[in-house]
Image 1 (cartoon, one colour):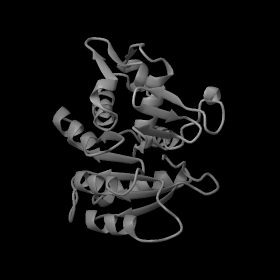
Image 2 (tube, helix red, strand yellow):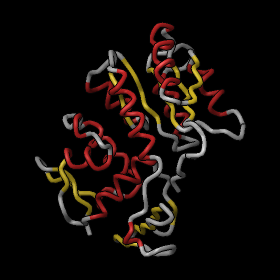
Image 3 (cartoon, helix red, strand yellow):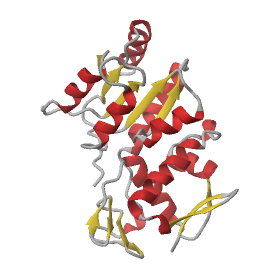
Image 4 (cartoon, one colour):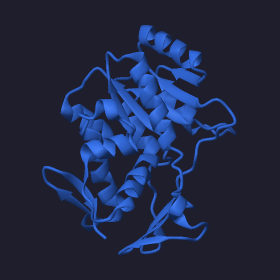
Length: 238
């Protein structure tokens, strides 16, 4: 089940960055925009802060890739073992192999340095919005479900089951499945999915986000459910 981030308090960010100049500047921007940011400079310390018990969880993790103690990709994998918390990786390495590696580890997004602060903030807002997907008005209330073969989608509860077993999806994966399920059998382009799932009209060329998330979603729902239409996009088989 995907849990919505609380809205009665400032969003709490675990910010992991070992460069003091970038860290201080980014922290100032986050606080200026009323995020409750906790800044740490070491990957192991970040994991300890994330895993420590307490009443206030982190709503999103913003993490550099190259870190002392534990690198950001490893931290992301460890977080994904226990939580679906939105995770954004930041790195100066923007090659496709590095981007895909970060996304395959479970990151919801990947921002390349040097970045425009407004772009970073926009992408943070987007990933946080995806953590609280809105149930479809046609869901029909509690208990209403949509069936796709061995998959059962309950939009009201934000739950997806396969053969009755509840699947653990990240917020982005749930939003992606719900979008595909909106029109079963209809091909949706990568640009369309970026716009509808990620709210990324201005970054429509960032197709790695779509491809890797579809790959991750397939591994959970079964590869036969999502078809690749080469040169066009993806569709959910009815």
